[in-house]
Image (cartoon, rainbow, N blue to C red; front, side, top):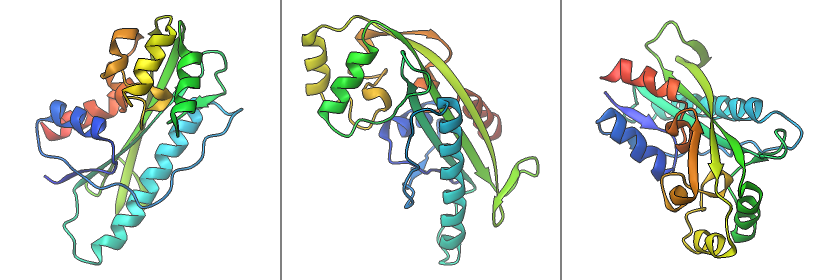
Length: 209
């Protein structure tokens, strides 16, 4: 079965390969992601962005099909946003530079915060899924986990920034990377922090294993 992860995230790919124990190929979407805004629920935003990715994936692959490329039987899209510990209506996405990453780490230091992940599965073969574009159908799941940061010293933050572990990570940190020694999972599933709704992955496991 051809399974496509429509993402450039190496962390997401590694997670899926470890869990599903099969070869998964990747191809990032050509479409741009929706921008985050302040003043709107992070849960709503992460779900809307994931749906937008699912829609774009269905549209893009409907076009690619006409070029007789090898078409995946399952496409997976996902999005993750960290919720500001002091403002649940303030989303913390991927920092664009060291300054933004430092600011995020300072906000997270010594506090608990929620991490939201929304994941959609697209297929043509499940009549229980909802139509999205062409022959593609989808289902979407959204979950959150709670992570606690230790109080970070200036040296801790400098170390995390210099490691570049913040690059491409929502909230500016990687739970399975260098930030692991400064963080603790308080509630929920680690998989949700690493980039997937755990419910969606359970759905995949039931279909593929």
